Image (tube, rainbow, N blue to C red; front, side):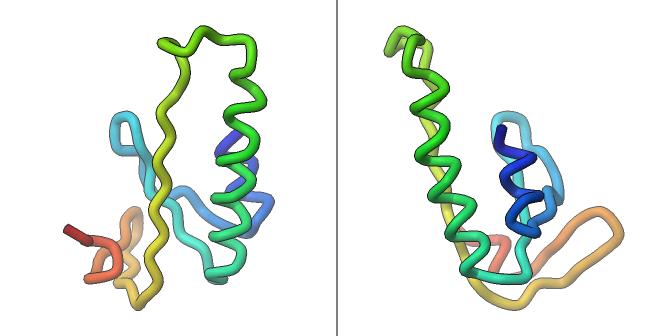
Length: 81
């Protein structure tokens, strides 16, 4: 559900990082709308799952310039501590 949502908002999954992923959007509003849709849809899809088996979802958005390489992106907007 997450990957198709990202694509539908003109985003691109850059990489998967174990239990997470990094996606990039040209539009901050598309990123926000996608994040909101994911946050609404995941609980709907998990409605019948016991509480201890549900996904704990955290989404962070950051806006700024990035350095784009062949299969990754870098920069102060990506490497946030």
